[in-house]
Image (cartoon, rainbow, N blue to C red; front, side, top):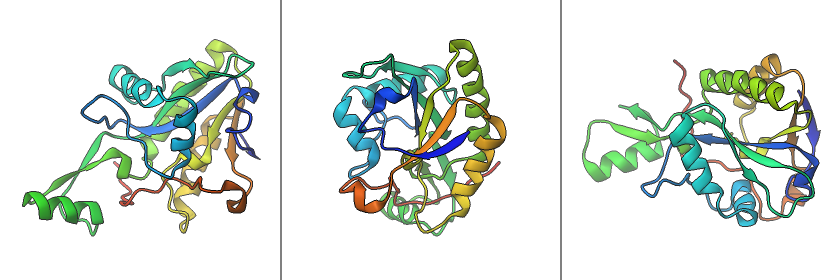
Length: 204
């Protein structure tokens, strides 16, 4: 694994495969949710069918990474792939959490199911996705696989979860994977790291 500064929006064709960290959560229409003003939203603008493809991939393969379609308007055979890192939901009974308080207050329940998109990456799911990614890399003989750091649901003010996830990935995937991050915030413009209203870290 190597960490580099690179904006995949400018040149996605540099890589053979671009991983999309996601949850196993699906909306009622079968699509994967995309947060507004996020880096993922910018990617979807270039490939509008992605939410439907991610939802279908999660429905078919669960938390196992699955290869999606070819990226349009790229010179090489670049493709997207899911990289599930959170479950579809999590039962929460008494967290000090905005989403929990909003749902419990609305539906008058003693517990609620926090949606997967609001959760921080689970270590066991990151590890499983990495193991399956190695199989994909070997099967297709890939040398240039990209995992954009901006697509993870990290709190920008807290480094520990980022270090935890990168530590797992670096320990398992040693070749062929590039962790990319945008040069700096001033160059991102309106593209911001996707951070959900709920930051719940769950570990089995």
